[in-house]
View 1: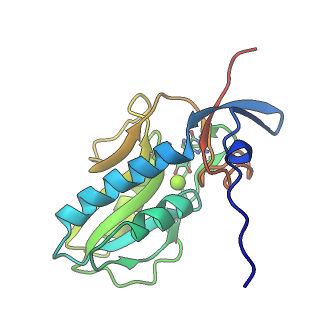
View 2 (view 1 turned 180 degrees about the vertical axis):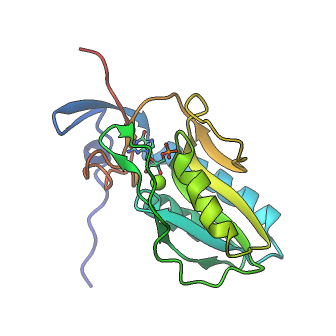
Length: 193
Ligand code: 5GP
Ligand code: MG
């Protein structure tokens, strides 16, 4: 069997990176993200011990958060990814298209929507509206990151990993025009000249 090389922490935890000619600075290390994920998972483990929830991660951004989160769950749970894209560049685009890929019957189920980040909340509201049409027993939301300064909705976000300022971030699933999803840490747009 071939041995996987050890993770090179210096390479994956650079203090600064450049994507599409924009500079980003380290904001959350892989270790910090890990702690956040574990703390969200432990709350879900506690709240859903006997409920067998259906987790619905919203692609693309939430794929890493979802992958790490579900591996920390010690309860019975199903996972069904959906897709809904409203974002291009560094600003929320406003328009949200329909929900793609829900092939799970969620009627009467306890649903947990898994989001990478909630910004204005428009995406989340559209996702919740679509999901409610399928009559789940309950819906809660788990978001790795939440920008309270940008949020414009009434929907409660039950599990917030980390509240962050209203600035653009990349990494750990989140992209900047297609790049940066593979980064293990999260970086924030550096606005300094
Ligand atoms: P909202 O509809 O809440 O304004 O935006 C939600 C979606 O926009 C998120 O699911 C995410 O895909 C994207 N988004 C919001 N803020 C950021 C950010 O700071 N960085 C990145 N890469 N995507 C973001
Ligand atoms: Mg998203």
